[in-house]
Picture 1: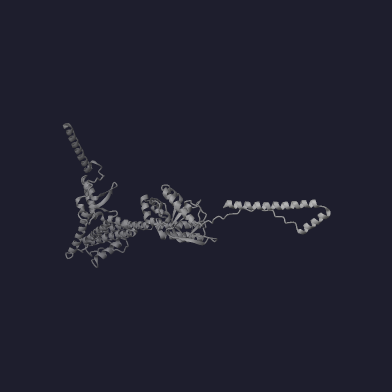
Picture 2: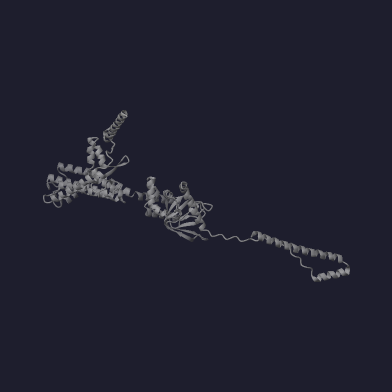
Length: 556
């Protein structure tokens, strides 16, 4: 027993040593790849939960509160960026107003400190697919090398990247981000002119205000006059006084070079911003122009060309794009399903045909729906056509027409209605269209192909049975009840007509002839045959009537 206890204690000691070595490897990042960042501790630091009103973490990609806070930090950063050159160059900071300047500076510094101590430690980032805190990354990097520690320490200061990070987050949540891009590019241009105005006043003060014709003479508002000079210099408008001294010449040359590069860059950025903002409309115009050119080359009738133009205009104005599916092809299936559920599920779920079906089957069907716009009077489907699609009305109305002239309106279908399911599900003995359907006004329809529906229903047999049952009921509901079959009498067998009896006058003449000429035997035979034929006819008539009565009883 003593040996066993010693052995167990030795095993426990070995396990403890092994555990300590594993902890050291996790903490020491030098033993692993220097580019990798390993969190030192999975638990959050104690100071993170200093207030119940501040969240434990902030996901910068989607947190609106963080975007608002970055806006405040950007305001403080812009205050320093714009007014530090002004206070350095122009004599606007005086002993009388220095307290106001310092108060604003301290307020900006307070915002920076709060951002470093409160928000930045809660900022989350993605590393290797895992969401981690920025504080953890900084803490671990300090143990690897002094250089990485230095750059990581600099990266947490909002003065360096707060403005650019705010721009990225704001563009991600704006609907029309190109408007903000135009404003931001214009602001960059104004800031370049602002810095040039400050440098021009500083150069004028260095050479002496009013000492030459080129420098600022000290009259009027100094900032406005210097800004006007900067605009004329950088844009190279001309009309400036010629520099005379070496300092003035070098300063002017630098202004010209900077102006050429700055404005070329600004014009290029503005072109890209405007091009990106109008890319969709440019694509729409290109497609429409190419279609019109194609129709003109083949001499398509004008009424058809006008309908094509109307379709392009209405589709673009109502949807802002020509094909919704093309826009979502780059997204994963899960995201496309989420978008389809938010956009189309409220309409499809109200369709009576799909009520009671598997919910996942409806989700799969949403991904296969195509949105198509029909113009007023367009035939959606015609009677007798082979049905390959089912239609769900998203917006607008369609009419089921028929009659001798083909214009009689039987029923009007509105948003949420479905038609074409009978042919698609092949109930009623075929897949032919049973009616004509035309668009009454502009109609936006969802189309589901038969191939896509069959591929979906393979995985949902119960829903398939339910859909066929409902479609069959809908088909029978529209039919008139068939009249009951009446009892048909069997065809009557033609009966030979009864020979009329021999007239009395003729009979008297025969008797007189028999008496006078002795033809008694011959006339008796004729009479006997006549009587027998009449009796046999009566018997045949009686038998025929009895057979008729028997057949009627059997049919009943």
